[in-house]
Length: 172
Length: 356
Image (cartoon, rainbow over all chains, first blue to last red; front, side, top):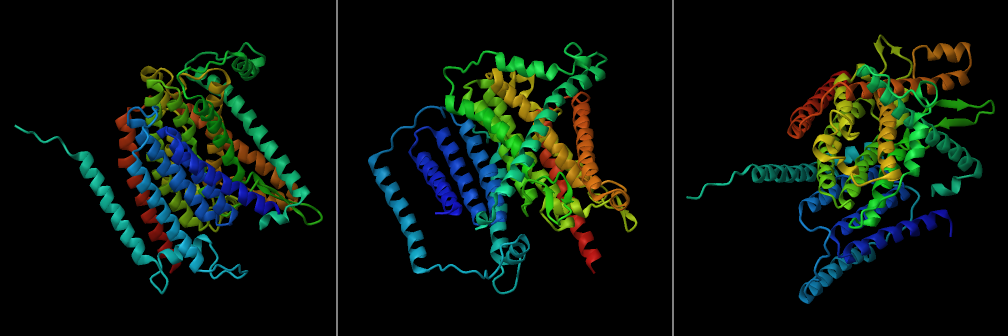
């Protein structure tokens, strides 16, 4: 077992451990903090794989952006420090089934495609390549999905502004 | 994996470099507190600290000792784990950014081996800095929530909203810079600004991207939580803001992290826009004196630029009054972001025009 392996298991333990704590803790705020550590562990895993760009994007978007927003909304909800109630058994069963289905979906993909180790990368994960691929209109380019996703985000943005702007209508 | 290539000498070299950088930034942060008081005193026609040592130079030591000796109070209703995690995270994030900063030109030994004055030259240096900066707000948020205090909570809310809003404009202003230099590596961006004058124009990015610089420096004030954007710790409304409940060295960590952040931000500003360790006439020095001197003067020049920026931050703090919160949001969303987008558009158009 060399240094790289040890690092991998440390990162995996961090991701899984904090992920488990995030779903089992009954304090909402702590769950968010554990989620934060889990996401940082993911970023570490990308760094370990030497996908620096994706790792940095993971930190900027998920750790620095989305989790801040989650915590921000927890700040605004009341009694965030109180322990949450234990969910009903029915809800627990359905949650378990949903989690299992998600896990099965990923596992099927992993088993069906056998990943083999290779020295020659088809495309080096440099920023230039990612940019060209993302906005490419040739074969294998992602310009169309990229634009579709941006329209979806624009719609969400306008929608949230409309909701925020709504003045209480007068009911006589 | 890359880990197999690491030798003991490499580790030793990096450990020494990290210790020097850490010690240096702590020392500079310490004397920034002294400088801040002196600047405030000059601005307000007072004398400032002048009892401990000559010109009050031992004042930071006395302050540190005082903070260590003070009684440590943790509120009983607070969330103890997060209460301790808050200031620790603030300090950790403040120190982490220094890893990707190129402190000086490479030193080439006689036997051809190269000593880099940089802890890690990762090829996404700017994104790394940006990521760590976006993590900086967690220290404030955790501490403020764990204090179980209404003033702290309000302060945490303000800090979070402010950080998220100003990060956007900061990132957009950097995109224009990255588009122009075509690299995300800090060292490469600094190397591109070699010397001072080349082909009939300035090499420093400030002269190519003045608007990006203005947006970036305004956003750094906001990210640093310094006046005129220090709404998360404004005494007149929120008592002490997020550090109301903190005492002893935990309070010290928060205050200290702010000064380290200020130093690192000054270094980043001078690296990205003011040529970093480059200075006019460095080729002449390399040719006529010795390449080693280029590196030594380079490090000193970088530190000099950083000190100039620190003083600028202080002058602004003691000159401008604090914004109101809606004004702060208006400035961020309605002025800086459209300006940054406009800057991006113009930069793109100019790059396209010059390519043909």
